Length: 162
Ligand code: PNS
Image (cartoon, rainbow, N blue to C red; front, side):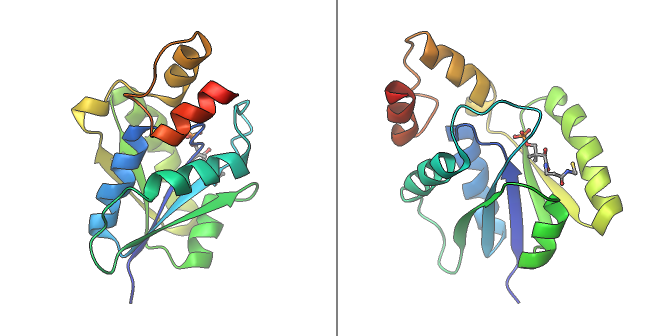
């Protein structure tokens, strides 16, 4: 049976830190679903469809081990655990940069476990990506800064164009 994990987030937009977490998750799971979730608490810069297409472009550059694949999907509404159940995922994956991330993620992990007995696996962010966030990237790009060190090329281009 294939081991499936869901890696959820806003990904508005995907950063190199996100991409690293997805690639590392794909070393442990046969199938990783990068799930672009509508977070009602945030005003998005990119539509769900734009985010999906940027992620699809970015993952083309990954060299995955044989037998492993990354799927990109959206969750415009509904519970993450319901999506996870539908696709037969055994775990959720989250990247953690700092204790601030952990404080934010722990309650969600506990709620998801309460709701559907789904475990969350925390992957520590590579230190080279520890300071990168989608919001910082958007701010720097909006003010004319170069974000090409922080995001895949397609994302950098999309930020320039929008
Ligand atoms: O990148 P984000 O915005 O911090 O990701 C948060 C996200 C989308 C993972 C979280 O809001 C979420 O899981 N939303 C789906 C709705 C849900 O299942 N909520 C209850 C469990 S936290």
